[in-house]
Image 1: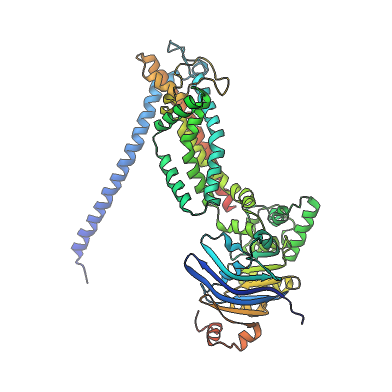
Image 2: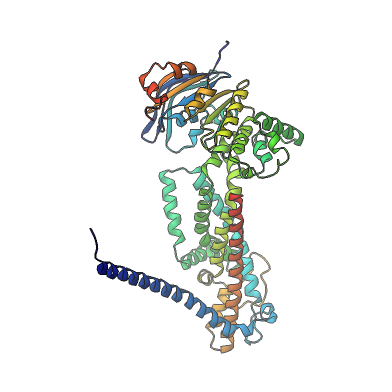
Amino acid sequence: MDETTALEVHDLNAWYGHTQALRNMSLSMMERRITAVIGPSGCGKSTFIRCLNRINDLMPGFRVAGRVLFKGQDLYAPGVDPIEIRLRIGMVFQKPNPFPKPIYDNVAFGPRLCGIKERARLDALVEESLKKAALWDEVKDKLHHSALALSGGQQQRLCIARALAVEPEVLLLDEPCSALDPIATGRIEELLLDLKKNYTMVIVTHNMQQAARVSDTTAFFMLGQLVEFGPTSQIFTNPRDKVTEDYITGRFG
Amino acid sequence: MRIEAHTLARMLSRRRGMELGFKALAVTTLAIALGSLALLLLDAIADGAGRLSWQFLTSFPSRKPEEAGILSALVGTVCLILLTAVFAFPIGVGAAIYLEEYAGKSWFSRVVEVNISNLAGVPSIIYGLLGLELFVRAMGFDRSLLSGALTMALLVLPIIIISSREALRTVPRSIREASFALGADRWQTIWHQVLPLALPGILTGSILAFSRAIGEAAPLITIGALTYVAFLPDGLFAPFTALPIQIFNWVSRPQAGFHANAAAAILVLLAVLLLMNALAVFLRQRYQKRLNL
């Protein structure tokens, strides 16, 4: 298989104030693959994924050192515009966070920011994005109803559609199913496997089965450090590290 | 350990007694607060209700109490508050947006924050003195509507800033992050997502601030607003009067007729205040609906 690296992390360290959240992380994520990040609460999973689109820049007291290369370009190099990064690397959050606005406006928000004003183009983009997120059939007759009237699972798919509408290359998912029931979770997982054809994805999850089901590569974090990183099949069947094995077999965490 | 039955009964009855005592105390304090308010209102109604008429609302002040009215004071109050809002609202909301969204948690922003809280507690007469020196004398606006509105704007500014910041703070971080993650910059996030959600709260706080200003007499008297005005203000630099000043003036006259006028003017002022507070409540209701849609 032809594997190209999409994101490369070198010696990443991160701090909130005086607390160090990430220590010397180095790993790379392949294009059009799903990389899962697992580990106990507080191990730095969220911090890690939030470094990949510089959304953590907004956290007061947050500091980062090291390099994150996206197609060879360092995201933290001086002169890099975080807005451009966020347009190319989209993100879906733990709790569905649709804007308290109509469904249509939620999806059209990103494209509108990019200056797209023509109704026809916006309509097409909204439809296409909702279709990609497998939500179109459920909402096509109520595009102008409030997004908050949707169920949790629908809201999360709307958030995915909203992220896809700006046509990113990478999609970061920070525990996207932790607030959803198993059926909604199943739908999102199906969706991710389908989106893999076109997008590079990084997913943080607490759910070991989920990581095993959807990801190609898995990274296991502990106390802000990368413990093990490798093909998902190998991590789950034949982990090299004792700690990884204990964690995935449920002996702690 | 077992407690003997009669000890337990005594203990429980003592507790019940305590509870009854506290309840009585709470009811008494409430009665004092509400009672004095009701007494004030009843007194004003008893004295002034008879004077409330269309003639009272549409007449200028006069030397004869039965011919006098509050037209100039009412119009002056409305103009003053509208003008105050024009100055104070954008500046107050702008300052709140800066402090809440841009300033971060620096040493500077903490100093500003403490100062604003202190300013909110400064007696209104001090603002009057500042207005007198700054707007009336230094800037040469004289005792005009403009001077009055600018002084009032200074008075309400800290309250608007504080309540606007609170409203901005209620907008969840998740909404901001969603917006940033879609490539919005700070201003786009504020304008498209944060402000629409915070606006009802900002408006509620601001209206309450303006309703405080509407009852203020001290700063206006300090800047030398007139007490006898037999014409309507015809521009920013026109002299003016306002309801609290008119009331103050009438109360200090010896004739009983003017006291009735003062009571009637108080009723009008209360009506205006109630109207503004009702608007604030209405906006808050809408706000709550928006978040749990």
